[in-house]
Length: 322
Ligand code: SF4
Image (cartoon, rainbow, N blue to C red; front, side):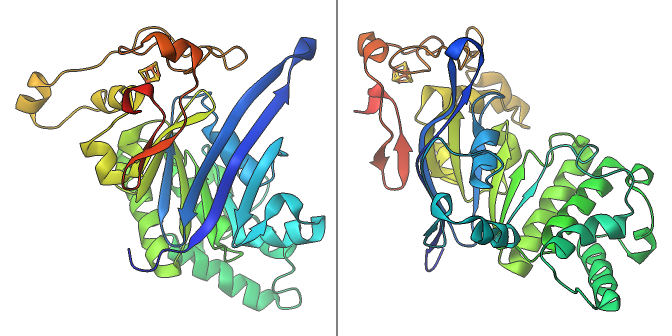
C-alpha cells in the first residue's frame, strides 16, 4: 500500500453494559486498532467476543463507556449531536440479516431513498433522486425494474445488495459491515464479497468487515484483528496472520478451516479447543483465554498479557512472546 493514512483510530475503547444485580458486562475491554484509508480491516471472533459491539459503538448505536474513536482526525465521542448526525453520511453500517434490516412495508426505492432524505439530499428534486436510486441499483447488480418491489420479493443475496445500495446512497467513506455474508448461502457469499471489493475500488471505500470465522475475511481483508472475550488478541496483515498465526486462539481458529487439498488436510494437526467460551460477565483472571489454552502457564492466571508488536506490524497479546 502506498501512502498510509489512518481514517479510523480506536483507542482504549471500553463498552460495558449494566446487567441485573449491579453487575457489569465488559463487552469491549480496552480495544485499540487503526483502519487506514482504502483498506479493509477484518474483525474476527466467536459470537459474544465483542466484535459487533465494537462496530456498533463506533457508529454510536451504543454509547462508549470510555476511550477514543477518532474519525478523520476528530474524536466522535466529543462531537455535538449535529456533527454526529452529519457523520452518518460518512460512516454507514451494513447488517448481518438482510431479512430483518429492510422495512417490509417500503419499496426498494423508498428503502434506498431513506438515508438520502435523512441527510436532506435531493430535497426538491424527485427526478434526480429517482435517477440516483436507479444508478445505485445498477451499481449493486440490480436494475430499475426492481425499484418498485418489496423486500419479500427478493432472495437473501439480492436483499443484501439492496442493503448495500442503501448504505452507499449517502456516499459514505467508511462502511462497517457486520457479518454481511453469514446469513447467505455459501454459493452467494463469494458474489457478495466480490461486490464489496468492486465497490471499494470504484469508490475508494474503507471497510471494517466483521465476521465470525477467518475463512470469511481471508480474501477481503488487508489486515485482521482477532477478538476473544472483549479483547483484541492478535492483529496482523492478512497474509502474515494466515502464514504465521502467533496467538494460540488464532492458531485454533485457523486449524478449523478445511484445506481443499486432501493430502495437506489429512496430514495437518488440528487444534481442538476444550470447553466453551466463558461468560463475559465473569471472564477468567489474567489471560481471558487461559481456560482453553493448550500452552497455559502459571503467569497466565495472574497477569493480563498486553497487545505488543512482536514482528513488524504483527501484534499479539500472549505471554509466550514476551
Ligand atoms: Fe495461552 Fe498464556 Fe498466551 Fe493466554 S497468555 S494465550 S493462556 S499462553
